[in-house]
Amino acid sequence: MISLEKEALRIPLVSELMIPSEKVAHVQIGNPLEHALLVLVKSGYSAVPVLDPTYQFQGVISKTKILEETLGIEEFELNRLSEMTVKEVMDNEVPCLQPGDNMIDAMHKLIDFPFVCVTNEEGEFDGIVTRRTILKQFSKHYHETFKYNDKSK
Ligand code: AMP
Image 1 (spheres, protein in one colour):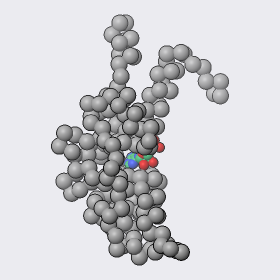
Image 2: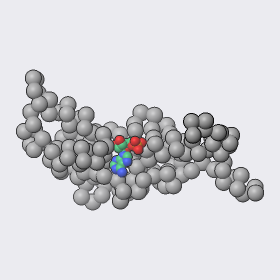
Image 3: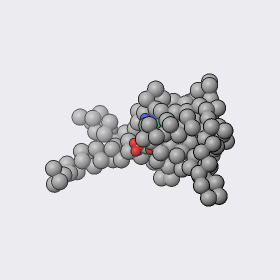
Image 4: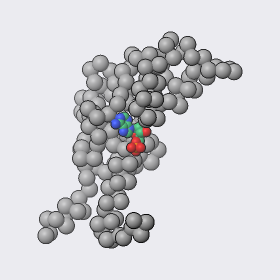
């Protein structure tokens, strides 16, 4: 009983909360922008991680950045999609987490970003933690703690 209560109070680790790399859509740093846009549109995500060929995390590329970059003075210059690479447009000033960090560390970083990438000590990409995962944890915790009865059901 005591160990169950302790388990309920334990703060989950990032390694337990993250979506593992094999389930995360990503693009390569050398890909043309049009490939990145295709991945973003097909996956339905607004941004995805950027990796290099050795699986090192390099940054994040978003639909917004690509659109900003292709917008000329008066119209979209779609030729830029094949002329430019992900490296030229991606955001590399993004926070990361390590697998041994906990949910509180993740929450702080997720205030400003919808997802945060997880890297190991060698800088290799391990996965992502999303706001959705954290909100689900909170929802579960509050339902269990207060036996909350959802009247909408
Ligand atoms: P969510 O909190 O599930 O809405 O996810 C927030 C953001 O995280 C999405 O808009 C994507 O940018 C990113 N994301 C979530 N799941 C994945 C995934 N499997 N692959 C790539 N990016 C993802």
